[in-house]
Amino acid sequence: MNNNHNSTITSTNKEEQVLEDIPMGSSLVPHSSHNFWKLESIHNPVYHVHEDHEDHLYTEEKHIYLKEHRFHKASHDKYKHALEKLPDGPLTKENQPKIHITQEEEKIFSFLLEVNNHFKLGTTLRVAGGWVRNKLLGLDGDDVDIAIDNMMGADFANYVSQYEKLKGLPSKAIGIISANPEQSKHLETATTHIFGQSIDFVNLRSEEYAEESRIPSNIKLGTPLQDANRRDLTINALFYNLNEQIIEDFTGKGMHDMKHRIVRTPLPPVQTFLDDPLRVLRSIRFACFFDFLIADEIMDAAHNHDVDVALAEKVSRERVGTELLKILKGHDPVGAFALIGEMKIRHIVFTYSTGDKKKKDLFPREYINPIPIEWKDQLQWENSLYRMRVMIKLAKKYNLSLDERVELLLAGFLSPITSHDMSREQIEEICYNLIVSSLRLPLKLAGNVSTIIYGAHYIKGKVLVCEENKASLDEQFFANIISEDRVLVGRWLKNTVKHLYDKSLMLCNVINTQGTEFTEKRCFRAVKFLKALNEQHVKLIELSQSSSPLKGNEISTALDVPPGPIIAEVGEDLSTFIFQNYPQIVDREQAFEWLAENAQTYKSKAELNPKKKQKK
Image (cartoon, rainbow, N blue to C red):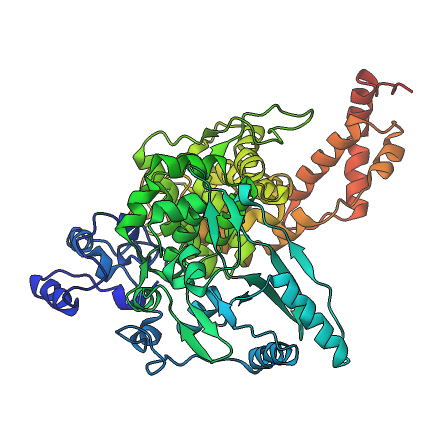
């Protein structure tokens, strides 16, 4: 959150001052009919949350102000200084912006030029796409993609390998990623390693299309302009020419759009999206990662029926899942999900598979006849975004890793379509269907997300309590609750959430919200519950995560009963006994004493329910 936006705007004079700061003809397009996703962005100061998690900075005046001037006020200035240094007019050799090239990059580039000169290839080598964009923003370079203008990438990679042998350098294997036009991957890519850095080589693009087809009928070597025009966005269509050591902007729009924070396509967006429909999601990812505006024509193209059909049918679910995972790990996943909603592609991205379920599976493994996930109304959808926004705040506060934040965000996003009366299996089915069957993301991710949601529903009765006579529900109040209900809390830790208890409590902050409840103070009680648990009841956590003082075979021997369900029952009852005695620790001797006292009861149960003989 940009702290510069935390002050409440209340006076007309301040509003007029901000309007004066917007230059005439600014490409921030204040009269755009789109980009309402900015209101949901984490950069929107309306949604700033105090560090004590007690309240939001929210006033009616500020909300109205932001709706009217959202494009200016809701944007952060992270890249302000880098963007101000970019040239205003067309890019030339004389007004080149300065970029920082590391020693490692300089070494690689010099080596590639040596290869080019040694074999007299006459090739112009260009670094394409994201590397140039990031350098202009003052960021580290992205993956290095080298565009070749007079041969295929694999051919140049072979020359690299030959030159390495001539110089006595270790030669690395060359990997070939084949073109797959049906999945909108039109170009063969050769990958190798130079001085430990992965480098991709690809020829410049020039596709010819058959009539009424978006699959190229002929692919040949192209020109830099053709390649730039085929790229998804103008800000990704810039080149760094290694031969001349200059940045090139063949579309004439890339530098302008970088400076003015616009996401735009070089060619008409419908054509660009039909070439590769995944570019719809890529435009979302880049707009929200860098906090740029989406051009109106992109928003209109995203509503095109043919583009929708192509995104649903032409792009593999693996590619959709990979793109969505990048969005979740980006700077503004809430804004990105809101943008998916504004583009009206929610029903394509978030789906269930209706394929047949396998034995012992709660969800279909195959992605067949998908149907969209249903939010019952707009308020419930906004609640999904609201819960994600709070989860980002808490993930930052508790220094969660990106992978942990992804789990928490998905839990927040899916939790509104679950309820407290759902079984664990029902919640698992929702999570596994979307995350595994639809998005083809890891099984472990789906399992953790479902555990976080189910655990939040399970414990919320002890967290969202109300004490009428208590002015402040502080950590000590919740520490007392944990002590009084140590068995329930202990079993919740041991059997329900395990190591995910902290994330489940973070979600519990908002598990009872119905919309975007800006002034809802109750929703942050779980943070205090978590603090009380971590600071005053850490032994209870350790007990829940430690192994039982008695092993199954020891219980079986002590009771003189064969292994079976009764042994598991004894184990559960022993856990209850241990939690009842907390904060005192039950050692092995005390556990055996407890077992001896209750032995006859368990023996009787074992006799009544003998273990069935297994068929050979």
